[in-house]
Length: 308
Image 1 (cartoon, one colour):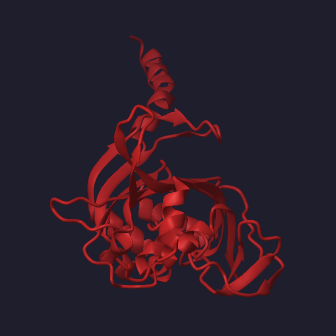
Image 2 (cartoon, helix red, strand yellow):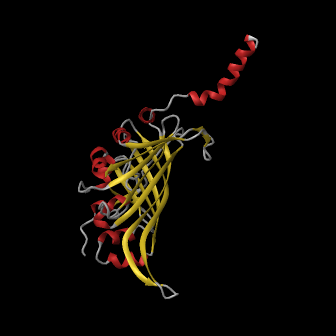
Image 3 (cartoon, helix red, strand yellow):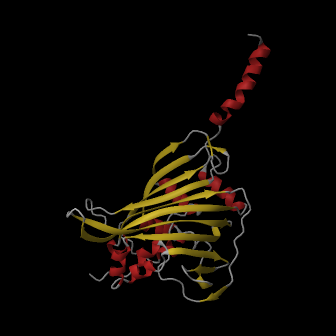
């Protein structure tokens, strides 16, 4: 083949293999670049939790079975970054409770479940400027509930804050599995991207030690030996794409449920989008007052001991 033809062939082939030769992204460096420029993102989240509340019922065919009570939640939000982490956040959550009557009956003697029932519906939370604001379900005006970090609104249901550099480094040190997806086009943004997925486990005690936002949300260090499995997904720029955690209680080996066995299974995942776009989070007009006693999943960790 003529040398010029060979050279043209190589040049022509280069773009098709560029993605394959791209260096693997560093998720810590990717996060640091977002922190340095004060980036922000929109979020979508979804999760569920199963309680230990059960009751035996008789079916129409005469057979008996057990039913249980649990919750499903989903919503949207925003996060705004500063040099050390999240400096402001918004969280709009919709909560539904299945077999609600079981929880209503238990609420008569358990303040945790009584508080949880008050959050059914749409709950809005904003954390900005060192304060937290809340618009409770069925409320018509906002309440300024007290001092809080900028991350407080977004990291109560979501235990794992990968937007904290120290927390992210700790997770990376505990990873047990990694996978890399083919190049695809994001159906929301249209951007061509490659997603990297890491999975591992971490004790809630270790998460409490390393993560300021989890310490603020949990409100207690009495976390026992509970372990959560985490999954972290980042794109070819090293930017956060999705993070999730899940928890299971089981008898062998013995793993008690969260909050004195109130929550036996739970999971939550958060999707991050639009890191390229400007982000502003402002405080709503509000009056000082008390917020809801139970307003996110982490509140079960500091719930009082149950009356049996």
